[in-house]
Amino acid sequence: MLVRANDRIILALDVDTQEQALFLADRLCGHVGLFKVGLRLFSIAGPEIVRRIQAISPVSVDLKLHDIPSTVAAVGRALTNLGCAMLTAHAAGGAVMMKELVNAVSDEAQRTAKPAPMVLAETVLTSISQRQLEDDLLISNMLVRDAAVRYARKAQDAGVDGVICSANEVAAVRAACGKDFKIVTTGIRPTWSGSNDQRRINTPFDAIKNGADYVVIGRPITRAVHPVAAAHAIAEEIDSAYADLDA
Image 1 (cartoon, rainbow, N blue to C red):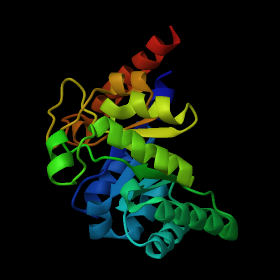
Image 2 (cartoon, one colour):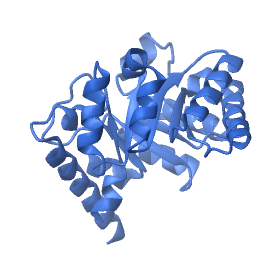
Image 3 (spheres, rainbow, N blue to C red):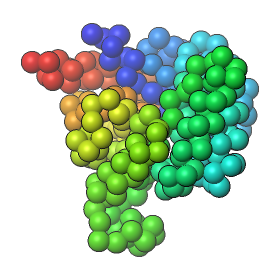
């Protein structure tokens, strides 16, 4: 079951150069399921980094789109043309924005005969604490978990394939949205790794046990002395969670 577990890891390539990203992609290809190109790397290296990594492995383009619907739809078409496996937008952008994105991706995939990427909606960033939800995002009288569930339901109604949330909210989102809705979990830290700038964190084992389909992991692998060994240790933890679920 180790291959199954490896496929559930999305490696965040949060690095500052194309060379670093390609080095990690080449070294860890086959040891993780997808490579995530976020806003940081995309801004530095542009769409070409997506094309180059896709030559060896599927890519999630995580730009967390949040703009007027027509702009987000246009970017969705462009990312579909890149051939990425996943793309992301903020659920806070609203139902119309998400619907137009989903439609644009579907239409462009049909027009170009390319596979449609999975569209994922970001619920509440894992860097956001309960206090920040209230003071900074002005969402009062609501727990982070409940806000994540409401965003997830809105996203599902808009036709997106799944959401991104912290492992602390996975079980509630799964219960609200059903078994077929995809859940990607961020803020994942093995017990042997530091929390860094994340606030709502959890282990790979707990994320999978709670119902996540994929876990996004960056620094515990990319900054490890032996990145391949770190990826395999995380895969084994995921594998043990599946075994526990099957027991």
